[in-house]
Picture 1 (cartoon, helix red, strand yellow):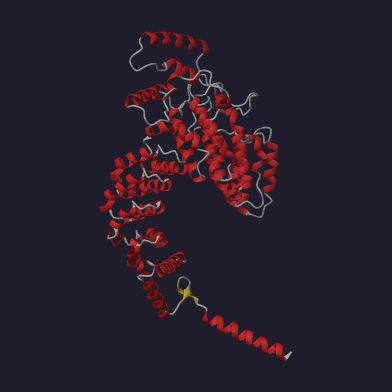
Picture 2 (cartoon, one colour):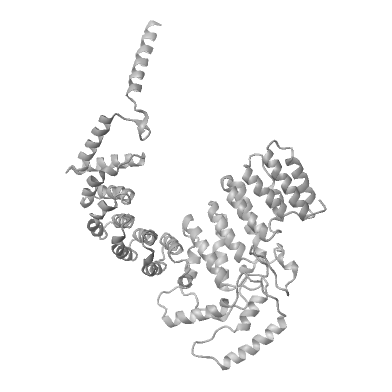
Length: 528
């Protein structure tokens, strides 16, 4: 026992000595260091950075990046680090650029002195060095070097390495934020980068397009089919960007898939029936509209989207004219009055005969009545071939593990797909709510908007929006709002029983929301 006690005393003394040497919480990065110790550490690090030995420089850069990742201010070593930019060692050069990317904005004037070294590294044999050099140049927030940076971006936009081209696409928004007057030059570079056939480069080019020139929708015409086909191959971040771009593009270039309104500003023409605002979510026996072959596509759509980059200017002009004939005179958010099929057929035949006699040098274009007939039939039997291509390409995204991708694909399908194909979209959203609790609020917000547009959308999933005891208050409020939107005479009794059980909750805020929901439900369905 005496030996055991002596041993425990020795261990306790050893532990106390180790604890005394440990840094205590204080000023420097969460730990209090002695000023002399900090000064010695800084001198040793600066000495290793200025050493002629490559190994010492490499160790010094590793220590410096470790301090940077811990949140310590290392901007005082900027001059010592910039001296190593001309190093032949690839490892040292990469670490130097990683440091400069983080500190170039803080030390813009000092970084400007090394601009010649950055330009020289744009021709380095290693693509990683070329990309890092461009990242540092675009991070220097000095307007004087904007022309030099634009030349570097233009050069890297056609680099053989996709890694460098992606860095060029990321540099375009930085230059635009620094000097918005250069939008025309940057638009030319974006137009070049949209021709890229590498998925992760194209997604970055689309991100630059969305920030610099989102109104130049004409740049997408030629690359539409390529973007649709590459949608599945992009990473999750790129899929969200491409889906949002294609949604905005398709809503301005294609006619509505059916007669049902999907806009929050709902309104009907005098000729429309009031029942046309309610979506009938009954799947036909032979599948959705875009699973069928196009029976009568518009003639002008052929050749409108060209995947090749060698089209003449005259072809582009003709394609723009064809686009104006198809979608220029029809707003996707304005409901159209239905016309008798017999009248439409007679008018289209007369127009075709007149058009055949008056054919001009620009070639055949779709007649106005033919386009009106295709738009006003409002059935799920016809969709444009390119419209159908977009729906087919975006459907696999509904099975993504990323909730943002599912939400972007669901929004695209909601606005562009025929009503017969919407149940599959709704099931994907309900499944995402169950599997991704952290994204419940965002998804329920979007579902609430969909229900406000068309209240019958989620009636089949009525029970999926019952409140769970673990739901936070904001999620409970959204679920109660959705339940009042989808209430019908069939589920009114079940909803009333559910709301009555919520009134026994100990959460006063939730009880108040429930009482408010009962009032909304009574206003919608007085019989409850």
